[in-house]
Each structure stands twice: as structure tokens, then as C-alpha cells.
Length: 64
Image 1 (spheres, helix red, strand yellow):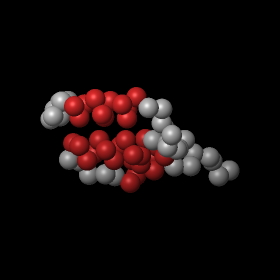
Image 2 (tube, rainbow, N blue to C red):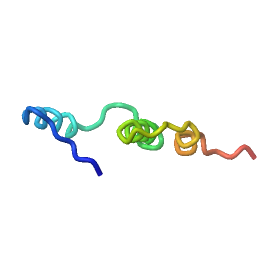
Image 3 (tube, rainbow, N blue to C red):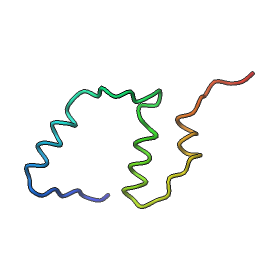
Image 4 (tube, rainbow, N blue to C red):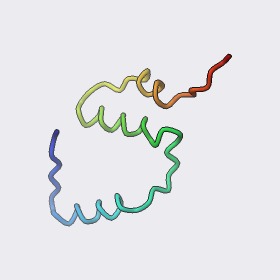
């Protein structure tokens, strides 16, 4: 896993304050999986695959 290094060190404190706040944004039924998946793909330099996003974030109700 890659390590994140922030400079100047004060940036860590400001980001930590944001991370510690309770989430107010609607994350959807899967807890924000699609957005998190996109972020991980971007970070690792991997292609974002729509079929993975739909597999987890789509409508899981059966049609019959």
C-alpha cells in the first residue's frame, strides 16, 4: 500500500478535521461504494470499470 505524505504538516490537521466530521452527503444504498471505487482506481492508476460500479451500486431487486 502506498503511503501519503503531506507537506506542510498542518495540512494533516485540516484534513483530519474534515474526515472526523459526520458525513452529511447522501452515500446511497452501498455506503458510497461507487465513489470510493473510483478514487481507488484513480489512485492506483487502474481503469474505472462501469460493470464493477453497477455490480455493487445498481438496483438489486429481481424482476420476477
